[in-house]
Image (cartoon, rainbow, N blue to C red; front, side, top):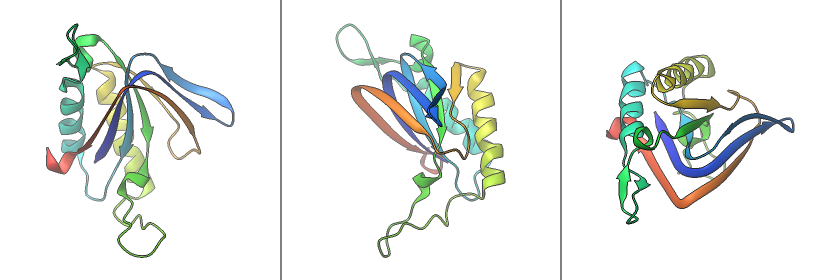
Length: 147
């Protein structure tokens, strides 16, 4: 399971021109599910995300986590995080999980994360317009297989 975290001042999602989700300060999380990912990947990734100290203290040092600052999360499904571009010019997505299983794990991720912080979501599988007011900017890439 892969995630791109962006520390944000605000983030929102539009589908067909209508806003479906919005958060203030917190994390925009682009989440991709790969073949073979399990509930254990969900747990490991969530624990790392909510405890990463990527919010600054009064001296500008990374001191606080999402939990510490009581921030929100906006989770957006992103199978393209599993793009393989080694050959040719068109990405292959063979390492991305099939849609039904990916949706199950995505929903489990959202459900478990919601137990810890306020969570908003995009719409799984929809064409979305994701607006991000990146704060820093701070962008972190995580892979559950490397945690």
